[in-house]
Image (cartoon, rainbow, N blue to C red; front, top):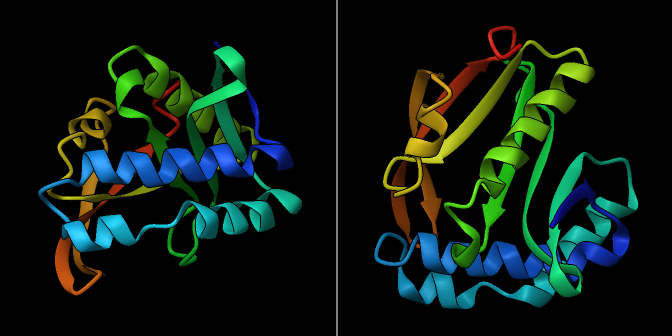
Length: 166
C-alpha cells in the first residue's frame, strides 16, 4: 500500500469509498433508505469537480490501484477556525490496520505546512468510530443538529490543536 495525493482518475474510487463507508459505518444510525439512496455516480461527479481544481485530498492505494481510504482537508469553511478535516473515509475491511492513522497524520502534516495551528472536525455523535478522533485529544467545542435525509442527528464539533502534534 502507498499514500499519495489524489488525482482526477481517482474520482470513482473516492466515490466508492465514500458511499460504502457510509453504508457500513452508519447502518442502524442513519435511515436505510437514505444510505441506499447514496449514488456512486453522483459522488464521482462531485469528486471529479473537486479533483479538477486545487485540492488537498490524499488516498491510500492498495493492490490493483484500489483506493482503501482517503482524507480531504483545507481551510475551515465557516471562517471561525483555521484548518478543517473535510472528510476521512476508509472501507470497513481496511479499518483497524493503521491506514486511518496514517491518513490523519497526513492531514495534520499538510495543514501545518499550510500554516494552520488547528484542525476543525465535525463527527456524528452516534458514529461508532468517533473514538478515533478522541485519541488525539481534541476539545469538544460545540454540538449541533444535522439533517440527514429526513432525520436529525447530533453532530460534535471538535478542535484539535496542531501545535501540540509536533
